[in-house]
Image 1 (tube, one colour):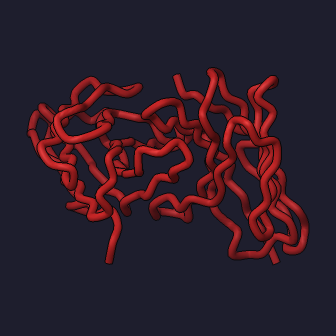
Image 2 (tube, rainbow over the protein chains, first blue to last red):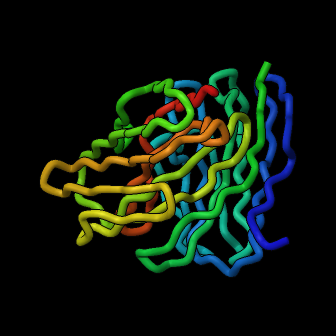
Length: 113
Length: 109
């Protein structure tokens, strides 16, 4: 099925560990974004990309790294996990057009202990 | 800080009633979008209104946009129990989509 695929769905990390959250879309969307969702905070933008090789920071980029080597994939790397990064992470993608809606993945629930 | 603030934070109504949610934002936008999130799930796009539009309808949804006040409202008419969810406004500026804090809607039988 076409859409945005996130893996894993659940992950538990120890403080200081690193990991990569995977995001892939098969709709040939130019734009891709990563969000985190915490209770009462809505979704906050971590990093986003407007095309392969181009990334930029969102509202809360510290502690995260991204790259966009292909149109399809946009992995999010946690460099050294901290308990404050316990959250639900969503990846989303969109066409470039200003009238385009975003399509969201089903999320990754990350717990850092 | 987040671009949008939504009001109310929580809303409880009975089936058949109308639900109105409001969103305020801070900067100029290209468009404003509304999304729904069922508990523990991803977000689903509901409706988009461009900055040069004032009102838009889709089924039981009605969205208004007032760019002079930097505000929008979402009206769900004749609500159903299945409408129970969190609703988020999101503003599109250039290449970013920024979300508000959301309204939790509970529709009871």
